[in-house]
Image 1: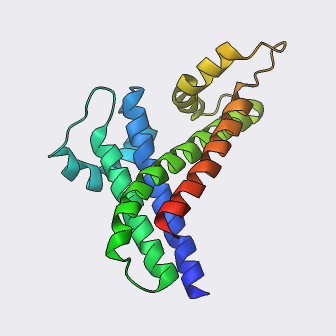
Image 2: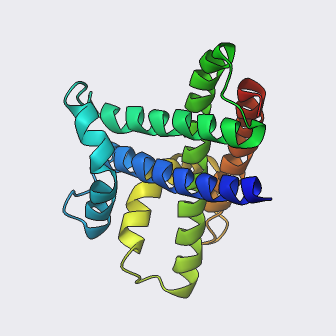
Length: 187
């Protein structure tokens, strides 16, 4: 029972930190203003890991490579901790390479989770409080994903179904990636 509680707490902590790293990379890619209070909070939360990596690897184009590497490291360490928690022993040497690849898929799973939640929060706030201070940030984050969907599906008299399509696609991505992660890591 204690290992389940510990596993739950570790999962929440690592997922939230991984999502913060993805948000950092995502805000860099879409050029979200760095002095935005939400960006500042994410920078202060993740700087301790990203800045040392930035000394060796810089951003490339629209990709914040140090944040992506930090997210992968977070996923890798997370899976090692979960392995030890669930099995009670250190991972075997032959499990390290699959865990490396599993960490990559875990980053994609966290990304799809972020897409799902950002879209869902944006939809709910658009109904409840469209003038909420976080709405411009959510719209900036989700617009590059929603706009191509809006071009593909027809207009239904003012009803925008693109968030629903994006949420469904993100959920499908999460399910597929979860299966890949579990099969690779053997967890």
